[in-house]
Image (cartoon, rainbow, N blue to C red):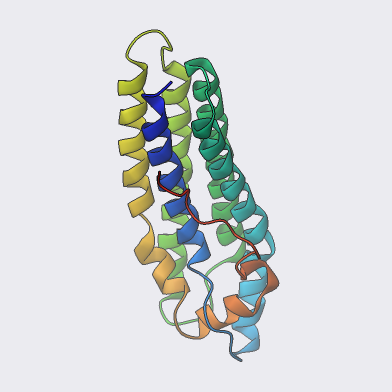
Length: 194
């Protein structure tokens, strides 16, 4: 399956970029207010679990692209990975909704922006799962994968502004003080290009 290998590398690289958005919350630790810390704890308790799911999905995409897999196996692995990422972003959105607005200037807008972006990412990955499910292993498979890779690249670019706001000031400091918002040790980066 020579044709699917470069496309699946693009899929894995784009998915890795999306995981990096969530990991962008990590930064320099410092002291900050108790209210901000309490809010950060609410959202960070679930953060590491969801980031791990996104990383596992990324690893499964990279793995299927390394071996000599059939189009049916590639289709199945891609669909499963997209579903896993969709669920992870959906769970993160729920965590931010439940936490309420962070106790900082513009906190309500920040929360709305982040929730909207996470919901959008969750929906985007659910749509990719549907596209992967519809891929025909016998006809137009590589072209279908290429279209999915393009859409995945677009998803990977979204959301940076919302996450940027979370990583700055007292809010960012409070979040990085929380165990769940610290970058997991040995967190994989994107797959190496051949």
